[in-house]
Length: 240
Ligand code: URA
Image 1: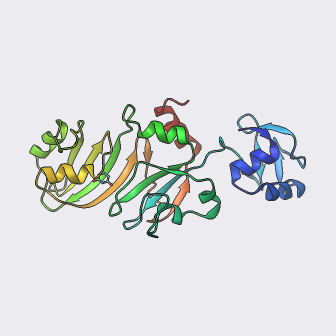
Image 2: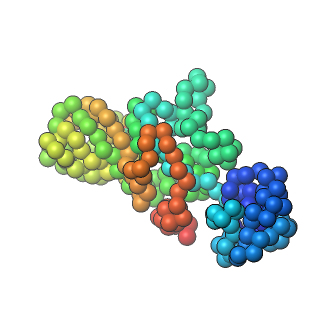
Image 3: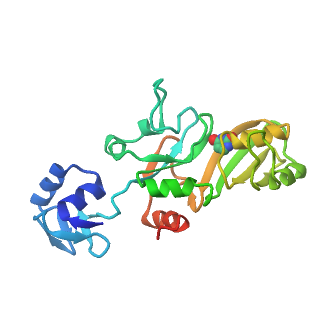
């Protein structure tokens, strides 16, 4: 990000302008190894090394987060009836940046939720034209079969829409499966299995395109995306 040092500092680290000024004044900010106290100087966080308390100040000014959504939490950013939403699990400074959810997950599903304030990326990743593959681990009441694998591969008429080819891989005895979806219609996996006479018991999203759920996160925990993860997402969205 390019601009005045105080603005770059506040935008990239989500601290207030006042706190950014205080950090500068206290000599806690360095640019290419030199302490800088003047917030008005112009900087470029891609070309220069800017550190606050020794930690890199970088980014494009947008927020990119992954959250391990637990069962029971809504993937919406707000709920009029007061149910817990993904946003409630984030600290205030991230809520203020107003990230949107990229591709919803049912309330009774768990796993990877991507949140970003980069609206263009959100739009592109969810656009039917570009469809990033989503990977889910599913458990069923009745084991899936080779017939189901074939049925998932072919267009399936679900009444209000016809599915695009989906991947189905059987694990264990078929009661556990991995499903890969290119699209993300409402309750799609549950409806595809219901079409095959089976009921989904648990559903967990493991990946959205190149972004994998961090296995070190516990349910309800979140972290900022790493630079390489952001770049991979921007690349598949044709924004690099
Ligand atoms: N398919 C579903 O049925 N539910 C989800 O949350 C995601 C995919």
